[in-house]
Length: 234
Image 1 (tube, rainbow, N blue to C red):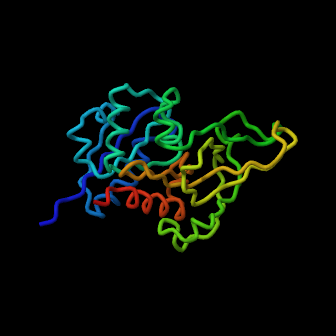
Image 2: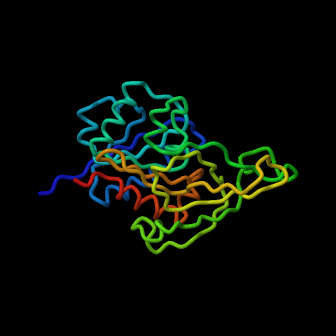
Image 3: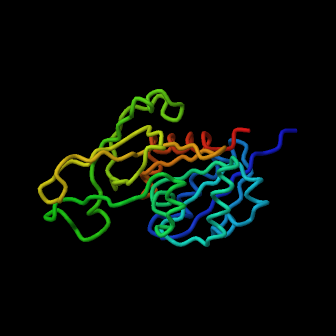
């Protein structure tokens, strides 16, 4: 009998991203794909070398928050040895802001989400909900994660991401120039990327601020495929 692959869901941090409800959306999918799913509410599990060595995929949803040195070292070591790491939005791209070693592992850090015109702001989270287009890159159009998906439009936070060239970017979005913002030319940010780290794979998708965005058919399909792509391959 083939042993089940093991997925570790780590969730917590800022409650605004609904880490429990968001990850619960994907647990049935993982189980249906043959994963034995373990859920932890603390990232200290990363410091458990035996547990991490037996984990094929980590799905992280921990916005901001902090991580101990031991846990961070454990996470990096596990990925380097082949454990996959996947996540969406602030749960992976805005985690542990003070830890440069984590940022290097992920390859991208949330910087901001530009807002509406000042006259249109209501003083709540919808001030940052902009209609924007997700465009596939040439690489994305040939990648299994994006198969059958065309460019699509979302109305939600449009992440501005600081990133490096080790990422394989599958989709992007462009922040236009606006008279009420201080930048002077359009800025293109990655929306979906993969990253190889030692024997491991990292997958990041920046949409996912709210449950309705995660339920969007394009977003959900990309995340589901991204988790499978990131999972240990050997």
